[in-house]
Image 1 (tube, rainbow, N blue to C red):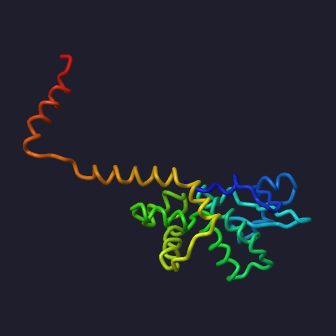
Image 2: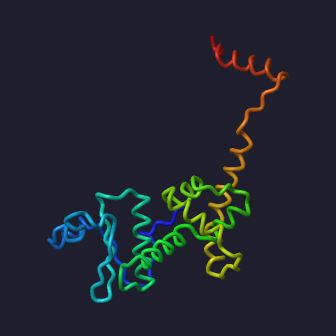
Image 3: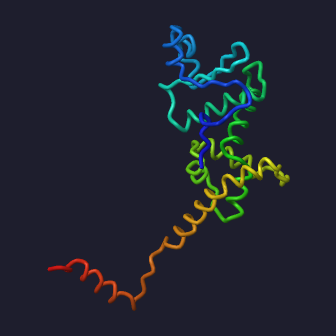
Length: 200
């Protein structure tokens, strides 16, 4: 179900590249973007003539973190941040969490009986356990507000995956404990022996 930020279409002029590739193309040293002491580990955004260039550090990032980093940087762009202070970082993280884990989808999963744990949310949306835990905390605190038409369209796009996940979860919960009664013991033993010695 994970949103892949690199595959999204944007209303703004946004390009995404690795710091290493951009450094190779421009001849600028990598440390110019990462800092001599590695101060910038994940990513950054450069604005040039109305184009936003989101750069990410290939050497420091796995796929989950890359996706989060890109969503975070897109958040800075759409929130029109001019500085990179603590408040802007919190806002960009909130943007990323709502982009990658839409509230209406969590709501639908919950309504269909899915167990929303940090592990399940991490798995479903391909985010870290820490990010999943924080997103669940904000989801559970939210007031019950009506969803917009855009969110309902998003839900329709997610619905087949929601159905697939909840059906899979419901099937697994049915087979958690094996059905084994005394009256079935002889039949199971006979089937096992038949399987072992079939064709001998």
